[in-house]
Image (cartoon, rainbow over all chains, first blue to last red; front, side, top):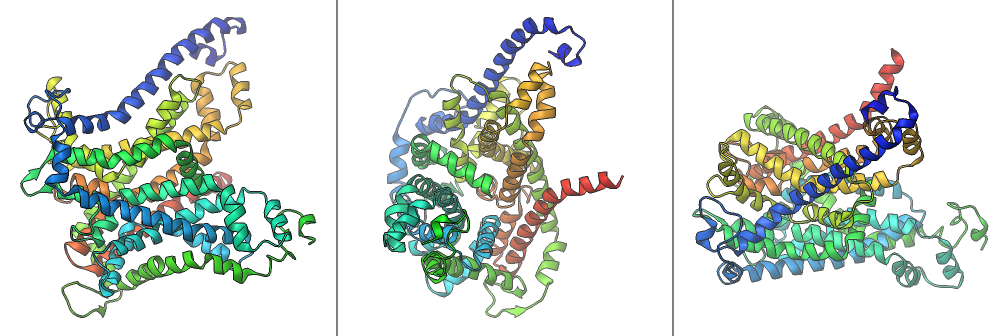
Amino acid sequence: MTDTALGWRPRHRRRPKLRDGITAGLVIRYAVLIGTVLLTIFPLVWLVITSLRTRADIFAVPVHILPDSVTFTQYVDVFSQYGLNDYLWNTIIVSVATVVLVILCAVPCAYAMARFRLPGAKVVVSILLIMRMIPVVALAIPLFAVFASIGLLDTLTALVLAHTASKLPVAIWLLMGFIQDLPKEIEESAQMDGASTLRILVQIVSPLIAPGIGATAVITFLFTWNDLLIALTLASSEASQTLPVGLTNFVSQFGIDWGAMSAAGVLMVIPTLIFVWFAQGLLVKGLVTGAVRG
Amino acid sequence: MSSAAQPAGRQWRGSPLAPSWQKGYLLASPALIAMIAILIYPLAYSFIMSFYRWDLSAPSQYFVGLSNYRDTWNSLGFQQTLRVQLLFSAVTITVEVIAGIGVAVLVNSKLRGLRLARTLLLVPPMIAPAVVGLNFRWLFNGQYGLVNGISRYLGLPEAPWLSDPNWALASVMIADIWQNTPLLVLLFLAGLQSLPQEPIEAAQVDGASPWGIFWHITLPLMRPIIMIALMLRIIDTFRTFDVIWLMTQGGPGGATSVITVNAYQLAFQGASFGHAAAVSYIALFLSLLALAVLYGAPWLHRKIRRAL
């Protein structure tokens, strides 16, 4: 291959050379593909393996890949000993409520931004983009002070409010793109037929951008589900702590219960895996187009 | 209704929707009110806080001007944080972007299993960074961890992964690279598939080497998407918290204390909200500066070349 690059080989000899190159190239390509996939999934496979080991097996030296025996006690322990139920419920409530609020607020806002000639819309859109850059800690610190002063600290309401506000800019940004891709003619003819703005939004625009709403909902759900910093800051008692904060509670002064921690980690990753499997197209579209538009 | 006949982009002028910007703001108001109350107001509040002495323990607050920023900038802890942050960002972004381009370019052809691989690649960027942090903490565990286990098996020396300052920084970088490179691979794959094929095919016909095609054609064509990737990673490395918090809590001895970890510790372990607010605004300023350099650099480069 390098010979042809130097350009002194006669042209007619290129053909067999190229075929050899393609074969070698294919081997390299498959090696890279397989290597990347193995590196990607192995740490997660190890998490699952650790969660299925017995306590003695976890602390066995030398480390061996396959467990001596498979046990599900860790999965029972995380519920009975570590109170995973509460963390789980809190996380589900906060994530679902956030998704509902974000979609209810973001769809009309994105529609207004994309379709109405709003004075100041450009300013609003550039503020949305800057909000994407703000470190979460810069928001979490003052929110702690604000929520403390109105007595909302350590409630699920505080978490829902904080997540809704912090996920809104990205949601509006994503939805605006989907609405701008729609042809305006449908809305115009509906308008000529006398449909109200709200009716156009609910009955015509929303169904047309259903994939966009789906992508936004999944992305909002996962980022809320995964959040550590806001929950760590605003929820101090177990009554309002979420799963990621619960994970930090496995780190005690007596060390870390690695088996139970891994089981909790596996349980926490399951919704993500489900969404990735069933909504990968939406996710990639949302993440990549969101990134490209940004 | 003359609006339908007007050219695209102008068609709302004169239509019943055009004058009703009040209606538009009415639709936007729930989101705008939520963002003003829970996003912009607290951020403005903490910006003001960054000019006050504001301790959780002290009953009163008083204006101190820029002294929080000055104290922060001059403190040894922050200088270490700044070094750690810049090293963390530089290394992880470089590795992630180069590995992302490399993998994307190599697997960008009709390979069996590519679809499945793309699904699997979406997993690390989407799972909770907290889980990633604890999992890598376990993998890098000195005694029982898999990484040292493999080293021992291969007869290599064991590394003090999380207990030694330099190794700890390397550990959190590896965890970050593991989690974020796959998203860049997907981003670059999407970018590669939207590239025009003619220049590449023409070069192949002319007998250019694969490396030559990559270096002189693919890479320049990919420049916009590489800029987007760099921008995303710059923003996110200056926001990173979860993985490091669960792996090391910024330790040992502040060796992995990036800016957000430092700000969190100042606020909730040191109870100094004013300093913490100053640190978080410095983080925002630095990421804005990095983006300005990123966007200014090609422009400066061109200007210098033209001047010469």
